[in-house]
Amino acid sequence: MKKVLITGISGMVGSHLVDFLLSNTNWEIHGLIRWRSDLKNLSEHFDRINHKDRVFLHYGDLLDPFSIQETVKDSAPDIVFHLAAQSFPKTSFSAPLATLDTNILGTCTLLEVLANSPFDPIIHVCSSSEVFGRVPKELLPISENVPFHPASPYAISKIGTDLLGKYYADAFQSKTLITRMFTHTGPRRGDVFAESTFAKQIALIESGLIPPVVAVGNLSSLRTIADVRDAVNAYFLLVTKVDTWGEAFNIGGTNVKTVGEVLQSLLEISTCKSISIEVDQERLRPLDADLQVPDTTKFESATGWRPKISYEKTISDLLDYWRQRVKEEGSGLVR
Image (cartoon, rainbow, N blue to C red; front, side):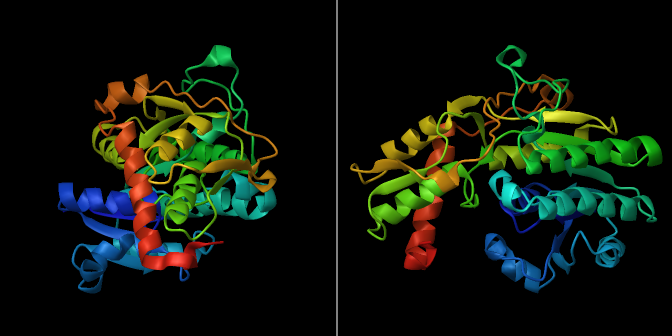
């Protein structure tokens, strides 16, 4: 039985990865959480966690090497999915040092501990499509060879993450694989991301908890939408089918939409038909990565992966997720 360690296990992607691994493997799953982590996304597995049935949680922090050493020792991983990060680009403008510390120094801490451990796991280093930043139209779709042009401190931090993954493969023969995942969403998506905050606001409007106005930022940015459940399937295929250590792979969906078009998709399936849109200056970034269209040929050739979940299901499930949250938490979600 393989043992896997997931950093960021309580996030959207980490929790969906747990769902996938429990359903499709017999692997033992270990997850790194911080003492203040919200475990709501893992609530379906609390019984397993409490009975130590295939799912084990370890307290620690990427910026505390001693806790990472203990976590690695106790989990003895065959595979590591490094998903933990300060993952919101907008936040990185107001908290650049925290973003750089967590994403670069935290990744370095993890890779250094693993390189000096008795274990030799396959390590999935989760970078981001944001590393490409502001891409000229003539370079679309974006291949792995497109130059980096970061448009936020978050993107800069993920370039560091990306390069550390390759460095540890080259210098220490660590079995790293780097992914640059384009926009992926669905149930459990944090409300700091555009399409999820739209869905949350619509759900609150439908319940009469806020006025029928959706606050928005930049609606013209182009995104390629994938479902988070397709994303975790891609990550599984990555660590089970690829052995070219230090390589980076673009992964993404096939549905190219402006942020405004995603909002319209949500409005069309809302039960409230009188919702207006209002630009909120605080939701605008100083700089935006505005043309996010991937070339995923390299990854698909290596793994055979293709997205399976339709855009319509992704959007519908995202809105239903927030409807359920509003039903359970009510006005506690208004902020």
